[in-house]
Length: 319
Image 1 (cartoon, rainbow, N blue to C red):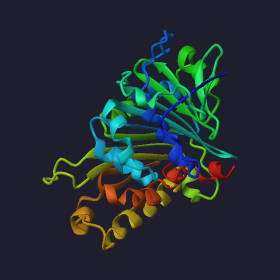
Image 2: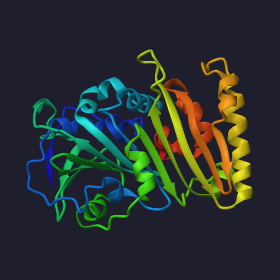
Image 3: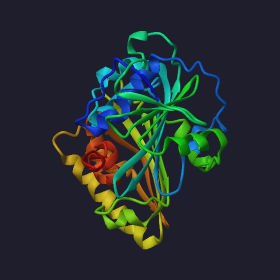
Image 4: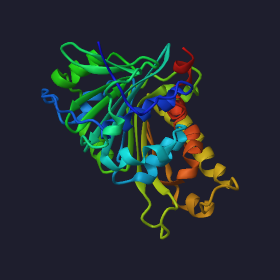
């Protein structure tokens, strides 16, 4: 194996910090080796599988939300400033298993060969793995890094050879077009079909056929930097009884819990507009307001199964 070096030292103590910090490397190294093109430029289709959770973010167009998510995940968003300036979109896919959280992250943007100080060459932390597909493997963490194309990088704690084979040869598994449209026009989007969530979650969330959720900047906010977003979502349950239970749960918590002193939302106006609705097997959120500071609070209520993502896969760190 060829050993190469980077000036970016990956912390060993927190696994979730290691998930995204290697993205700093991609602004320092050019993908100058000729490689085949990905089988599809629909990056969601390269990642998505039933059972897991797909997520996409747009750092270049909405740094505030991206920083907010990094902060929620325990990241030092300040250290990510340079790479986020160079990244247009982040596509991620998460699955839950016996050993914890598995993830694949694709970063799409502009990564020139400047900043040679953060070169991979000569590092004791990274080894080059060569074969039909080549990638870098971190010797201190279950983390792999591959330059898929000149504007695309892949980071994962899974089987990188299998991941690259799918990226270059398929199959591509499409997300429904109507859902994809919602995700693409949003600052952040989340989608799952027949999700297989970790044990210990509320039973009602185990009765979902699918769900999607999007975050849009609240244009009605006049002050810059207040970090207000409007959330739309659709939960498709296995039957109307499950939908009714989920509807009552969300309605109770998302409305009454706004009485919290930390909330700046006008509760009376929110109830009048009624953002929580039900239609047969579907529970729908429309324009539910949230601030960056209360993202964790919102996820605890509306998407508790993403806790391993937000908190970075602590079980995987222990293993």
